[in-house]
Amino acid sequence: MRWRVCAVLLLLVFVACGKNDGIRGVGAQPYPPPVVQAPPPPGGGYAPPPPGYMPPPMPQYPNPNYQPPAYWVPTLPPGRTTPRYTPFLPIDNYMRRTPQRHQRWIDFWAGWQGYSRHRGYDEYDFNHFWFEYCPEQWEGTDYAHVYNQLDASVYFWVDMYTPIAPTAEPNHFWQYYSGMPYGDLDSYCQYGCY
Image (tube, rainbow, N blue to C red; front, side, top):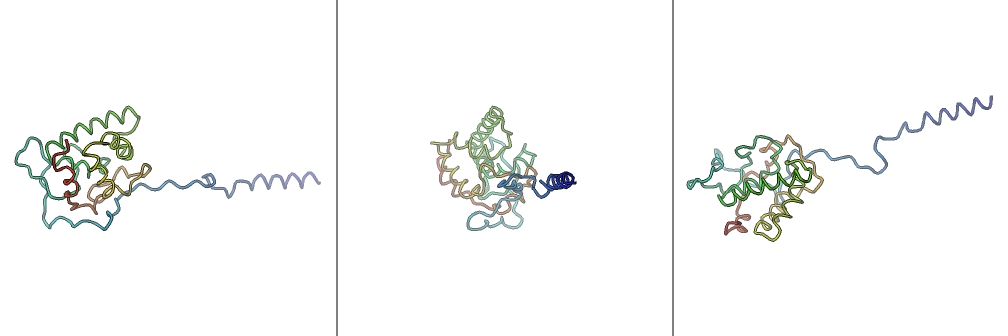
């Protein structure tokens, strides 16, 4: 009889073990959900473009009549149809504003694609692009100032582990940045940032 009581108690202890344990280990933090909208910039959002404003089409160089807009409207550029490109839009749109920077951006993006393949990153992995590739390539150049300005005013909320939704729609994602003036960035690149 005694062995039966011990066997029942042992069975109850065995069955009860682990019932209330979570799936995650002790101290593990849940992975944050992907960001679907960038938070407002420090100091609040920018003034939206005037009613009826239509941004000029993205330039196809050479085009001597192209006048870049004075502020940014978050739209995907020609040839970019995937929303996975959404996090890159502020730097992409800024670089397309002059023929020199546009060519530099084409070369820079091609360099990133090779770099990402070599390192095993996805070409739309913004975190490695922003925190690894850009600083490595732009350190000691005119673009270091552009990087620092964008990092402080646009990408301040991103760190190396920030997940960004791959389906982020540009106008919603960058809603608080629509109307962002380029003046601060242009002051660093007044001589072209070659």
